[in-house]
Image 1 (cartoon, rainbow, N blue to C red):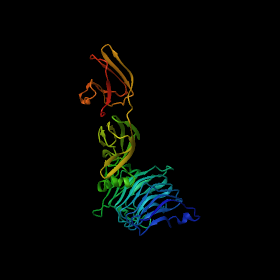
Image 2 (cartoon, rainbow, N blue to C red):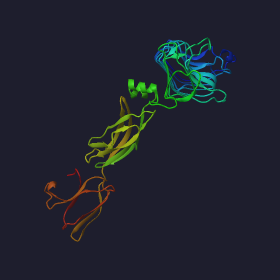
Image 3 (cartoon, helix red, strand yellow):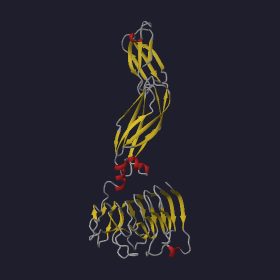
Image 4 (tube, rainbow, N blue to C red):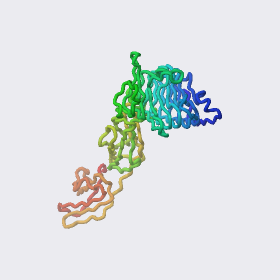
Length: 424
């Protein structure tokens, strides 16, 4: 549980070209459950080497290797020794005469290179020597050669007498949805039960001995990432969020809303599928004030979509400031956004006119609470319970908060009352 973060290393060594392979910027040896992140390496040969279990390297950049020849080129990112169940992810590299990623002799695996973006001249990548196992190259992107006289390639092959006689580089290894200028891809024909696969991805083949198992070369297949899909199926969407690949994002607008008692307030929720996932998300809200209700147009969204949350404030709601939590649930992952709801006292209606027009009573009202229920009543005996009064009109005040009521029945001068629902 030790880590290295936010480090910049620049190599400026006078004899560097003659010692290009004699050092490694960071070596992780006899260490477990540890990490390296946000490291920039410029002017080095070999850069980062993982030689044990359960380690992660992420968001690192290797650039400007001090090499001038393709002979004995250095490696940017290496699994070696006893490396197993370890991960390089979201790393980038650029420069001339280098290997992007390698595995060393008998590296046990499984190990993963995930989401690399690489460029430069006279560069390549892939397992390197003497039967590594279980190397997954997932979404490796390699740009064409910047000088135009070389074809960068991703290889799992028999390296024969290259180097010190490195032989077969790896077995049981996969290149998945990789976009590269060229694949150099083989598997042993004389050794039983040794297989290598290229699944999805685009790029040319070397054309001389590509006898590995190709599946759907020329297309990007689903799921987009083999590693991330297996991680999600094994540990749930929360595991994706923990390493920076949330399967969806949640946004809400507006973040602040006000409502008077007897009225409604609305929020628009947007769910955006991310990282090529297409999950179904369940929506809920918490933190509502007492005497408030809510409704979603739909509380389940698959992939990307939107819905509206309507909060209903009853006439008996207590005015105040409330924080609501909008929650989106996908398996064991919950993303939440807080919004502010201000509950206010409904404005008292202000009457413009009260008059008789012939035998009809005409009341023009304004400044009512939009959507609230108002009633016009009359009585000849104030001692009577309000339930025994005569109701002349109900559900006054529309969205504008204004109304005009005309009682077409014969009416005489008397006492008339405008009451809001819930008052007595």
